Length: 382
Image (cartoon, helix red, strand yellow):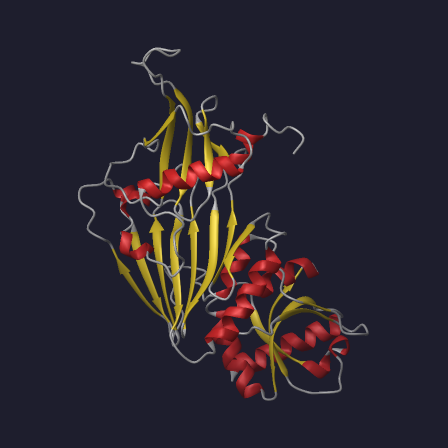
């Protein structure tokens, strides 16, 4: 075929020029007839270039065995190749980064997630939502959310492959906000869950993220936003229930602020196999009281003399879809005691997410910030 001839000429020029460099080794196959169609299929779905090379042509790969390698790249560094290798984990868990050249011994790197986007390699993804590779089925829907501005209208995209169903909730400006990916057949759910869970846990430190898990049921990577550069907070998780495996992700734009489409994402689309820590206002208040008590920053009589209530700080309609509760704490003045009994001044405001995270509303900049910012003046040595 013309593609094969052109590519062999390309390989000759590479071999004559010396090193190819760091590439992602997607897989080695014993026949070109298998490797070549696979490379073209992947090349239509991902960037950068995906192609094939003959293993014995490169001494750094060793010439004790033959075969054709399907690879992606080349990349400038081993770190970049190890990060990009993550993108193929959903289909090739044995993927790795390797050095390809005329030099001696084999040098390789396992996939390493150094950017949050690398975690998405555990599920199939589209580099371009508007260009669907062969064999992928994509459906677009626009939920009926009433009279809203164009930029507030969420878009639902469903991607179907042979053994995957993936749903994106898209904001016109922010991109995917909520994503669910479900494996439907042709895999061992327990083995894949264990592999994905280990990968997420090993990635947390490099991503400056926390791990929440119920071992054997779900693993969540959670990264709080940076209030300085306003990077959105993110979750990525894997959960298992019987023979069903769910991957999910959530992204917000700013710390404590929602993208335009956020309030209008249908609540049923958010349904996940990850259980919520809190699901109603009463539970959220009880959770916050316990959370603050365990912080060690509250007086012994806490929460006496205080009242707790819901007071939304997001400016959204009451009926908007939320996965958090904004709680205001007020000082209670009893008749005959100090203070005006007709006045209940605000002491603090917190946001409790259904997943269990707590952030604090700092009145000086007028935005939510990490809970640790509330603790810092009380425990400066921490």
